[in-house]
Amino acid sequence: THVQNDYASSKTCSVKTIIVDANDDIVTSDTSSSQAIGASSAYTFTQNLTVTDPCLWHPESPYLYTVVTEVYDSSTHVDSYSTPVGIKTIAFDDTTGFSINGERLIWVGTNRVSLYPWVGINMSDFQQKLDVQRMKDAGWQCVRNSHCPMSDSYMQACDELGVMTIDQIPGFHYYTSGDFEQNSYRDMKELVRRDRNNASVIIWELSLNETD
Image (cartoon, rainbow, N blue to C red; front, top):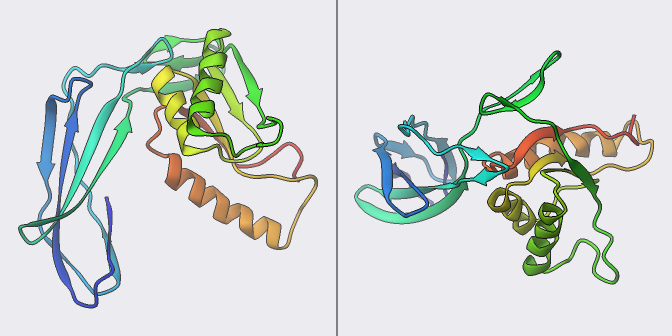
């Protein structure tokens, strides 16, 4: 948990992490040791929590837990954040192909480009989820996000409805160097940082077929 202290003085902080299931029942929790964070500085807290006998995330059963993060300044609660997460294992093998939670799965999927008339990528949250529901109803369980990061509401819908995603940075035709290349490295970091907790992500696509 990355905690930023924007105050002009040092703060002594700790982080309490709680994992709750779909019924809002607490399944595990942990409180970190205290750490002094200097003025206008940051610190990354590391905690290890175990969920016993978890319900696993799968396209056919997209079970989500919620990680509740609470930040304390000494004993005073100052911030909190809730993050939906799914627990899963994935693997790619030359012989058996793709597997999720130890079971082989053949993808049935599509490529998504935001081409809605008049609005393009600026669809409402409701439209974003409806788009994912349409893909799910069509029998697709995997989608390539092209050619840019999708909205938070779209990614959340993929988590909730069980649509695996190939998450992609922005790209354009045949750029090879200069500012575009440097911006691509920035985009990689921002994309992974933003979507690293989304259960639906199975591949990070950090280069594009149009870009050398």
